[in-house]
Structures are given as structure tokens and as C-alpha cells.
Image (tube, rainbow, N blue to C red; front, top):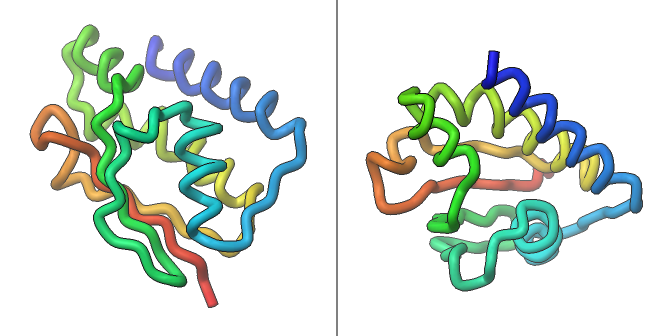
Length: 124
């Protein structure tokens, strides 16, 4: 039940954040708008593993409320991230640019890894 409440709260935050119309046209803007502004990750907590014209791969080491929730509830972060974070992130990215594709590497996710690896690409 708490998982679904967390998901609803994250969606509400996303909807409020999206009231100010925002658009991104390239992956450089994704870093600023999605990671730094929407997710509120500090620049030093998001490592750019790879960046090209059409994709950005990041490794985040920020204090993560989803990770904290999973640990407190003694649930697998792979499950909690899929249920709470991933749908909201996909929704926000589609609103920023319908051609953005979000992928999370569940073999590189905390606490099993030292950071959470994600890939955002632009369909061409």
C-alpha cells in the first residue's frame, strides 16, 4: 500500500512540476532539466558515463528517496524503482519530448551497485 501512495505522491509532484511548460530538444538539456531540475539531483551526484548526440548514460549516487523507502520497507529496490520511479520518469520525459526513451539498468542499481545507471535516448 505504501508503494502505491509513494507512486501517487511522485506523480502529483511531476504534474505540479510540469505545470510550467518545459521542453528539451537534445540530451544536454535532459541533464539540466530532468536530472538537476525535476529530480533535484546535485550536479556532483550525477556522473555522465557516456554522452552523444542521441543518448546520455548516467550513474546517480544522490540521496534517493526511493532507495530510502525500499530500505525502510525491506523491499528490493528493483521492485520499488519499477513501481514508483520508472513510470513517473517515463511520463515526465515523454512530456519534455515525446521522442525520449528512458531505460534503467537494473543490474546496476543501489544497494547492489555504487550507483544507479540510466540511459535516456532520443528516437530519430
